[in-house]
Length: 516
Image (cartoon, rainbow, N blue to C red):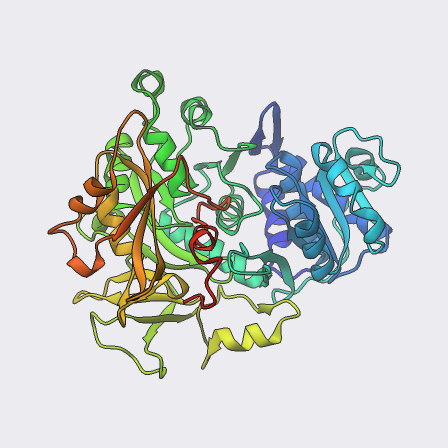
């Protein structure tokens, strides 16, 4: 018996409907929907023979590749919960997620075999370790041989829509990462509505340019496979390879983080001129705010494409989305609630704020996490009357467009006045010689905190502190202007593109008894 509102059941149907159609392209590998479904069934049946049951966890530690899709489809068919792990993590970080998630299996690529092998003596619960590629480690099994050990019949496992699909661990920018438990129902409905909102169907070709372990690329690959389109998967993001493959495979849509778009629009003119990019019709951005200047550069670069920017999270999928018709005239807005989403903006007393006032954003939707795994306290603290928050501050304008002002934790207080760094960053991004910028609060003996801008200059340019501060005059209130400026060659970011402001703050707050 198979419940239909699960990803595995949809892929079973698509294997019948689109049997000979290309589902995925990865480097020299091309697989049809029929081939993908058969490989996924082999993996599912092989794991079942090993004693894996619905609710067991399997970690995935690899860069993007074709096997990643086998795993997502195959595990979903038997209700085994996928635990994607950021392949940039090391040692104790990996150990924590494997332990915390109760993973009893892990699938990795050969390049990470040595890293994982050093952890195995302290992880006796890992009874199945599969490697994509060659490995000499005796505790690890070859992934392809493992698939060959089982047949490709449809698994006989009842998977319900409310069963967990995967556990997505948050970035952990302010402490230990939390495991967001995401159900099949949540991501299947997300995929359906995203296809409707972004006008994606079986004729589309989607470029997977971001890391699949991250929530956003996961959402969009699920979306494209659900409607019967094709995925072109990149192992990692390389701007020139993206441009080349847009032309080669006639890519029609993609999701990329803002930093990726920045790399694309800053490629050399002679590189851009080599490629026909006219097939692109839908571009989607999220993961960090898209600077107004960057939006314009993207629209100029891909002149025939529609650009969407959404606000969301691992826990909530897509919450707000601004459509192409509004993206030029609503600077810094993330639009209106995504279909099936309800939003509230509440003050500290959980009372609704007035239009134009800043408060904490809460929302409810069928896309939300079920819970934070083994963390009832954090789960309870994040919900209020059925509405969920990740602690972001927002406001609405007279047309009910939403604006994410900043993360609640990023807000700084100077002389008792709340200051939201994102507003200042937007101004600084318009400086022609500023490539990247982060604004934080630093200790101030008089005001408690003062505004500091940390700037990455564009290559070949020379900037001074005075020039940066003067640039803000007349553009924002004087109390919001940076009081100091530091320069770096690059800002620390996590793989989803979010600036790690905690790392920057620690430089200035490490000797302070109080950290505001």
